[in-house]
Each structure stands twice: as C-alpha cells, then as structure tokens.
Length: 206
Image (tube, rainbow, N blue to C red; front, side, top):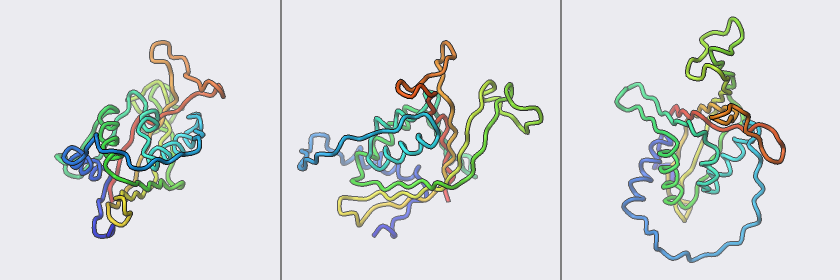
C-alpha cells in the first residue's frame, strides 16, 4: 500500500529512482502497448501561471523535454537541511538527468501543486525601490518573482496500488528571459510577450 511507503521529499524519490533505474531498467524491453493520444496544446511560457500549468503537464505526463524547457539555463535546485551535511544542490543538467530517470522508472506520477501560497518579488539591489529590505545581490539588475506552494505527489507502479508518497513545500523563483549577450527580451513567437522560466527551485520537506 502507498501509505506504508511515505517518502518525505522529492529528493528522496529522485535518489530511489536513480538507484533502481540503474539496477533494473532495460532500455531494450519491448513496448507492449500502443496508445494514440490527441494533440497536446501547450500554453506559452509568458507568465508564471503558465509555467506552473506546463510544469503540471510535464510531471503528470512524464515529459522530460517539456520539463527541461521550463528551466532557465542558470537554474539550480536546492534541498536545505538543518544538518549541513544533508543539504543538497544541483544544476539544470543534473536535475534533468535525475528527473528523467524517475520518469522512466515509475509507471505513473500524480503531481499536484496547490494554487494557493505565498508570492512576493525578490528585488535586485540595483533596481530595488528605495527602502526595500534586503534586496538581492545574486541578481543585482533584475527582479525575480518568488512563489512558495505546497505539493503532493504519488509515484506509482503499474498496478497503481504500490509506490511512494511525497509531501513538501516548493519555493520557485522565476525570471523573465533575456538574451545573455545582448540583454534583449526573449519573446514568444506568437504572442510577442516575454518568456518566463524557473531559475531556482527549493524544496522544504515536511
């Protein structure tokens, strides 16, 4: 039963999936089912809420290419701990690798990020309004949008009766996309609105 296997964090499930994937996954196993799916209509990444919508799709559909597209090139994942030796951090390449292994290993993922939670602007030190408390020098010339929301996730086998349960708070920092060489905004080709991506993802496990 799922309730007997509670994993307190997404970090735990990524580690488990990585180990089991390496030990058990057979890339040459035949695909015994063929399912014809209707065309997928994606939302442009022109707002943080659209990014969350597409993250929901990527996690539930196990779409690693869409997942990777949601992450800024300067992306980092963090899992802080009260015990320094248990804190983890990795970059975009590592996160895409670990998440891809999880997508391959688990037969079904049910991911739900709550729509309610905290939201604030993290101002850069050079562009912060006068009187801003503790502006960031990590991104001095731009402001980032920050969202902290609870998440639940079931990671299931093919019978959907056994697996892992994850419950955490996720903090996402998003930034508008700019050309790193020219500083010009990167726009969605259809809407001509500036794109958003996730630049920091921090997990606070229960």
